[in-house]
Image (cartoon, rainbow, N blue to C red; front, side):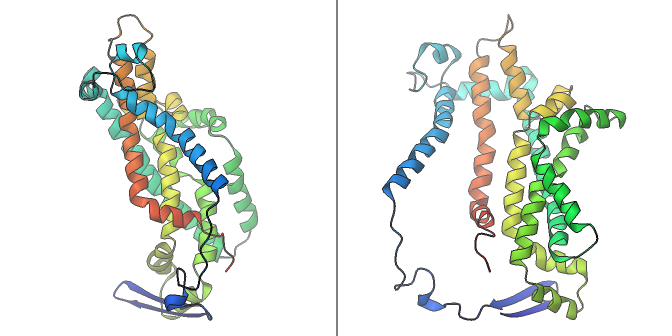
Amino acid sequence: MSVRTQLRNGSVTVSRRRPGTPTGRGAAGGPGRPRRRTSAPGMLVLALMAVYFLFPAYWLLISSFKTSSQLFSSNGFLPAGHFNLWSNLVHVFTYDGSEYVYWLGDTILYAVVGGAAATLFAALAGYAFAKYDFRGKGVMFGVILGGVLVPVTALALPLYLLFNDLSLVNTVWSVLLPSLVSPFGVYLARIYAARGIPDELIDAARMDGASELTIFRRIALRLMSPALVTIFLFQFVSIWNNFFLPLIMLNNVHLYPLALGLYDWNSSTQYAGAPSFLYSTVLTGALVSVIPLIIAFALLQRYWTGGLSLGSVKG
């Protein structure tokens, strides 16, 4: 393997080639490469799984076009005669003092800031575990992996007692700080750093006079970008759907994330005097809450699939 690196004017140039690597038309997709056959049973299984996972989304979409009375009087899987989506959207963003707008902003804050910070910390830890030798490295990494096996519900009460002693209960920090830790992200970052960042490249950068922080910032982060996007997406979705921890930590309605806020609205439908449109409002609010997740996956899909495939081939 030949590796060259240049650090000039804050830019990185990497040239990497393995001996015997096919180039030109002989590479992947070339005319001499046999095509893979599609398995009919396999495609059938995938189609059934797609229907299984997409059917609730279909039901949610259809229900968002209905009024509350139509939800109970019409077929749940077929559109009703009158489409009421616009009226439902108006109720979502104006009902109860536009609380949904607060919840949406809080959820974006928790998910974006928490996901980005957790990704950065995971990258730092994973790179250190992959490229440095220090005492207790194996034990520390084992403890981090053990964190993957601990359910979030088991940590909720200890976290509440800790934040209560620090006077952080019912604040943004009580939801944001626990989101900064991602044991699975550390594991994924270590695997990718070990596979995707050659030691020869790091040694060459050190010979050029680059500091360890410069190597991490200008070389490691760029080479680890597929894994980092994958970590960010996993953490983003986890925080976006977070329910149990905010339920314990928060009393201020304006600090609720979307999952907890919609649960609060849905609980209100059981009380006497609740507005008749509240059922359809809850379902439409749930539909709106899914849209940012779809956008995030659509924009970052190619990086995400590349990060998931890391470590699948021995190099």
